[in-house]
Length: 258
Length: 349
Figure (cartoon, rainbow over the protein chains, first blue to last red):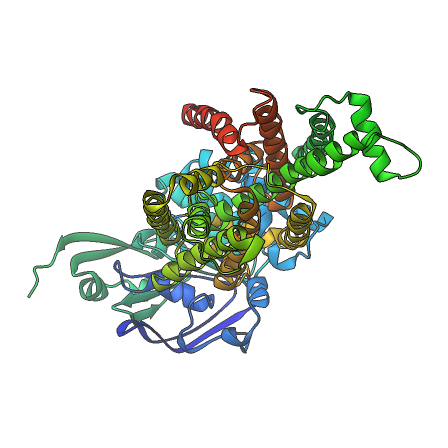
């Protein structure tokens, strides 16, 4: 179990404000989708939660302020899968996944470390790729490997930055199902930036809508995804239809600027 | 069961790495054994080894004075210098390529070698240096090499410390220092120009026991430290965000690693002059064989670098004997075609 509490988080680069007054609370098990237009601050928020960027305000995990924890301790609690992973890496899948054990390792590898790697590779169905180099993998395979690494890190909070953006329909759905299983069924908290509103609506338990560095709406997908929110955030006319209680967004046209 | 298959495959991969390390070390020892017997002096193999053992165990073996002088004052430290310099240039190449995530990063391409050459030229042509006396040229080369590293680091820092900006800064510096060296050659006398050119060729002919000792000491400490932090190098090689999220202080670590790599490079090239390609090629070859885990990649690249430089120097001493070619020319002759072959093979895959 893990509880994340974000209070009045703001982040600026020089005079340029990227995030302001972000506050929300969430706890495992949950899969939270961060949605919003390009440049709305999704990636920055994820990096602030992981403590890679030092923000104003407070980010706390189970009551412990992230900025006050040693980096190694943060790494044991939070795993991060960045977007746009290097695609020319010559590291093998095994070595890449093994790196997730870094926060738990002294120098040499124990039996447990190797077991964790094998378990993660099998769970993501990439055990046959163990000795392939990352650069030879397809986008879908590489994304699975990166998730496998985050899993071996053994942290209750997973942060993912657009894990499906480079994937085709089937791969995207498989990855989303997997992340949902890891989060909702296995008791983790996963927070992911995601562009595809319909994927988010279908798999996430909660959605946070960002626009211009501020939270515009947050809550369950069916409450958050309304024509008004889509119009306000994206400037797009849309209709929402529900199927099996899941909202689906049908964008109609970009609204004319006033 | 695939589970046990995977485990035995991991074990096999580990054995392969260990075998490669042991095998390379053995070949270096054998080649060193051959290298001490090479040279223009008229000594038989038996005389050479008698002299080696007489030096190691005085009283138990007796060798002629000539043999003792040639083996101990000319050949042995040169062989060890080749091993130490090759090892050091290779591991600093591994570190630079790893943290900058660029296969072209090396002491040579980052302008550190050019800066050392400029330092040496200032000492030779203008006669001014940070340290006077016997260490005028060496001291200047050392200080300028470190200065280049500091400049690259400073420029990258201003631009926000990205790996790309460090490489661009390095290339810019390489041109700048080459221009300064050319200018000094233009205004220097013909003797001075000749000396500068000889320095830039890169040679192990200026080696002696104290120099070997200094380099060995620096290498021993820095290699142990780098291998100890191998996991952090592994993570940095995959990207800043990944390393940071795995608990590694990225900026501080990059500074420390750059500093160590520069120190190793500076301490070697200030004694040998510019020796290119070892720092570039050795890590590439090794990565293809043992993979990217720095726990193995560092020592294995070091050994490959040692083997390459010792091999190149042995060739340089024999190919046009009794003329000894500067090893820097040899490494380029051997390294360039090899590198292009490697590159073409990589493209075909």
